[in-house]
Image (cartoon, rainbow over all chains, first blue to last red; front, side):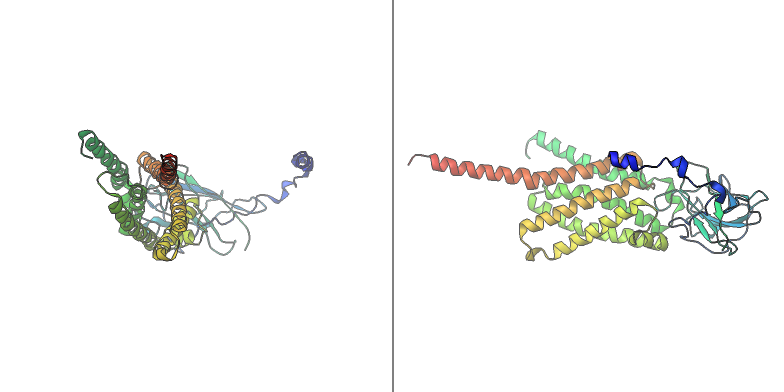
Length: 148
Length: 218
């Protein structure tokens, strides 16, 4: 055990400088399940549940405005394949996006949402954030996108 | 079984079994989530819940714990419920596939983001292996067959319980936990009783008989 302790480096001294900015967000397992490409742009999909987040560019951390984010989930309207549960929103000047929808309900064992960036300028990313409780009324997921 | 005391005990056992198995099913049937699901998802989900409940009955039948059901009849029922379990598991996976093919394929290929999927898949293949084992029963020595069957049953019970407990779904949490604990306890008690306690008692009584015969008057 002492040998292992000696091998440990003082991490603060060897960590690289953070000049590179945040790393690109990786696609999550199962993130693209029940994806329907080109979900229509919507004002809202319902009421009571808020999906929100921020879209940044990898490296520079610059907010990305005008980026389309596609969102879908199982809600009180039906499952993930229900067309009324699919919609797209576009990020604002500060890179933020938000979509109000019906309450998300547990689907296949977990209450979760799906979000996608799939428009070509940047590398495609599919997210599948899980709510800490099915009673939650909001969920947040951020994208850090890398150039395609 | 004739006395009033044993009869009331029998009624108590059956009532407890009915409560522990049917209670969670009834509470799941009252879940508000069902209103948001399609028929395939509901059927698939309940097939799984009913399988979990049957897995409490299985060891009780095998060990002859259920009053009013003889050992032979109990084993007959055990076999039929085994087929029902297999059918239920196939229905569970099949209807979930109809509901969401990508989620079900991810689970079967062990790449799902949910850890409970792995336990569900383990349980499913344990059931399939048990069915194959039943099919070749006559070609395997009984003792080896018991060990294989019991080993598979224990893994099946444990994997199913972990699978069920990790799922956030239609089942009510308390009744689900009670059923899961009951499944594990029944499996272990029946196994210990059938494979350790009873053989040991048989061995002791045989030895005692031999000794008394040997020590008897010439």
